[in-house]
Length: 175
Image (cartoon, rainbow, N blue to C red; front, side, top):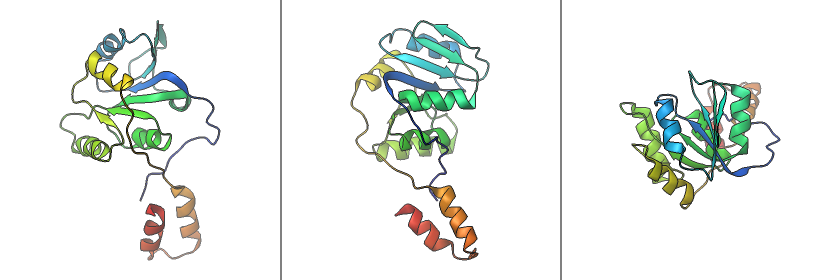
């Protein structure tokens, strides 16, 4: 089935120069260093071990679900690993996406491959300031996607009391 997307109904305005960064398995100080020269953009970096701080155009935050969702809604672009949930939300919101899949993680490699083959995102196996700048200033992905309200469809399906009939549900959600 398509992913269940947890996004608020009211989405507000998008800042065209704001970028949400979620690379929790990278050296956070190195990520900050890579983003320092890109002063035309505002970066909100979330990650374990980070304290709330402002470094010019770069803001760091520890994990925080509500603040993260707000920044996701307000950001034009998302730079993250190639996990499933954040990328699904970013796709639903039509964000400009770059993924850096985790090495040795088959799911991440597969997600990154699918995103690039479907022309939904850019991929970088190594991060450098130039790679990030080329992505930010470059052309956006040419395709987009929209996910249905999977949670509501599952609730309706459960109320029909036909648990053995999953094929029609799955087909309707992917059509």
